[in-house]
Length: 66
Image (tube, rainbow, N blue to C red):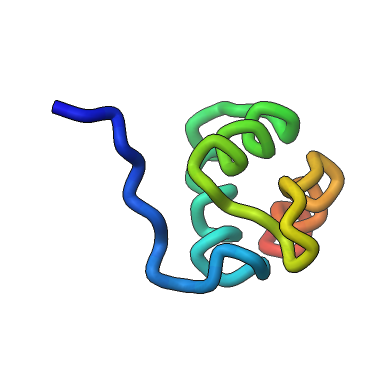
């Protein structure tokens, strides 16, 4: 078996509902903002400038969803 991560079907360069959904799942699993940002980066999620999402962005998504 390989450790290959399946990429989402959406664009990986802009925050989509999939990115935000994944962040919310990780948050509900108990991860903090920094850990969520690192996990999203590991899974291949990037912003429109091809940079990893910041913990600040993650925090905003979670606050906006509540």
